[in-house]
Length: 224
Length: 139
Image 1: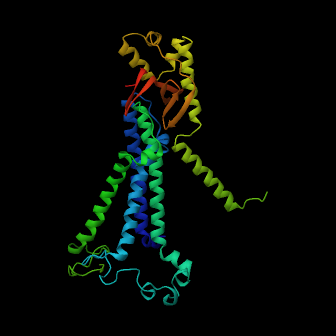
Image 2: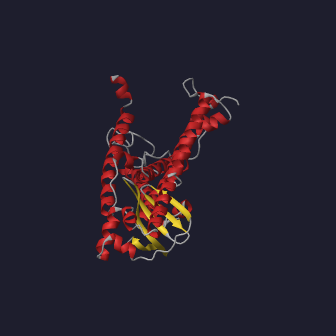
Image 3: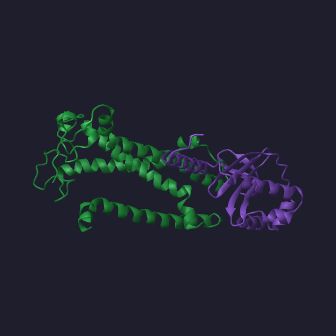
């Protein structure tokens, strides 16, 4: 038990703080929603009603989609683009999808390699791209949910303001949808870009996200 | 009929739940019928000169605001209105706690309340991108 906790500490820690933060978002979002209901002369709703509402769904999904997009782009961009001196980058001469030997696939696989890495044909192709594909699928799904829940939440607000509801197509081409989307995207892109650049010159002792403290600034792809 | 395997049955249930969720999110829920009924009943009460009944169908905030702004009772305000016959319902949309019901000659806005749908505005005409101009309730 103790060993299992230690071996999975990173995922358990993030899983736990994710649930706590989501709970906090649900509780504060409910309080805020009801404040607005009272201000508009409308009835308050229960926590259960809020957690199943399009308002909560759009607030959650718009953040999720941007996080998955961030990791998708990072996973894909780092195949071909490098940053000299950054531990987040590959060596500058290793751009591209690399050789089968480097990637331990097919004849270069070892007995502990996953079965689909040893396989050939479509299974190896699917497994070789499974991380990006999964992140991409989750991104697209979350963005779709954001657009559907966003249409509903936006229209609920339109109706409470005595304005005509809009269609899904009108919503996904609206300033509201793109403003919600881009305000999330810009912050994700800034955070990733900062990490790539700051990690060239700054260190965090013991973190695999940083170079070793004594590594040279122009050392690329080394982790501490 | 070939019986579905357990996995296929599970996929069907998931698909149905997904479709139901999408319908609910996109405003096609059966709630639309109840909202349209409430809007129709309000117009029936107006055309039948049942002023008290019509007032009881208004959202409490709308009822109070109407009486306050017009410096008369809700009933008197409705009595002095000339809301035309709405015709048939051409469009009903429900989003969360709000509903919009469009008739041939009118538009009605509703909000979900404990006793069902309540009218927040009626006798409304479009005003470009700005809020509708309404005889009862509204901005």
